[in-house]
Image (cartoon, rainbow, N blue to C red; front, side):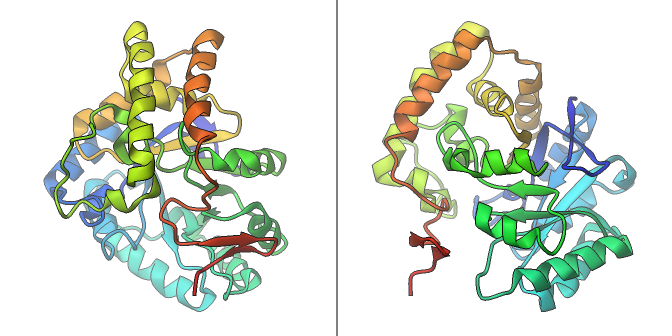
Length: 325
């Protein structure tokens, strides 16, 4: 499995990583713990070493399942989890996360979401203290703007940023990608398969279980859903000609983008993570990349600007995203 360096740290992470949000069994609907653990074990067999989770994934259930799945293999993996931006809550949150995952440190600790009411100086001070204590090995931020990263970097070192990025959702190309390359910040992309939209397994008439909350995401809403599926159908013959799956095609495109270190995939079954990991063996010619880019441009350029995939931030100005009152 291909590895890439995380920022300026000594960590080498696999270019395809297992995103464990679905294993929390909440937002994504039901997910059997035994299947999740089997998926973790299959990822280990393949050679994947980066596993990403968060306490917000169904009140820590994802962290608990990951800890069970990695029992006896802690030394072989790189674990990333997340915390709130509130400096006075970071230590307590991390302590609970460590207990759930049965470990005494995490490799990467991400601030899950920005919070303009909390000073970034205080947040970074705590994170750097935890690094110095050996409780974390790298500092990351998730869903941050370039301006926020620039401010935070005055008070510590950001090693990685975790934004949504895929063939349809490309807003980080405006500034985050170039900033990250300039300042040696690794991009660990989430929603690499647009929460399943880019796998080719969905149709306009697909009926999801009522507990699956993915339709809350902007790309799944009526004004965008059909556009996404149409783009997927245009990509299907390209994948077929290459003898690979749509998931592998779109992940291969993503990993070819300058600045991307790793792509998180939310596999829920062993065969899914095996398929996704196959993307590292795909080599796309310039002609193929151009054909994919043409399809991507058509849908991406048709979307209005969104700051995040759930519409949490309603407006934008020079000071950054603003929550709607």
